[in-house]
Length: 95
Image (cartoon, rainbow, N blue to C red):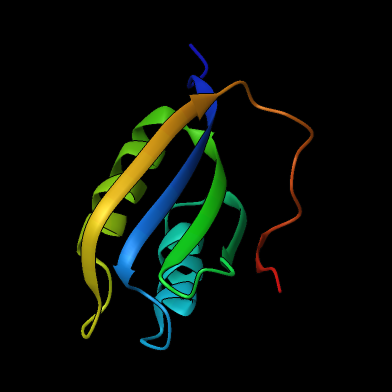
């Protein structure tokens, strides 16, 4: 039976810019076999990410986002499950 695939979009708020959060997201997503992207948002206090892959891996990804890398402080995180769209190539940092 094939694994159920999904897309997860999360916005993580707190001290998440200037602490290596985007690089942490790329490493975590890549290790979990996910594709998608991450970017700093213009407000200077949040990071947005969209990831595609198996639901189980996305659940682990979401749990990792709540922790973040050393130096990060996650005050709030909102996530929404979406239908998988066109596939991303790897996991990238968007400017």
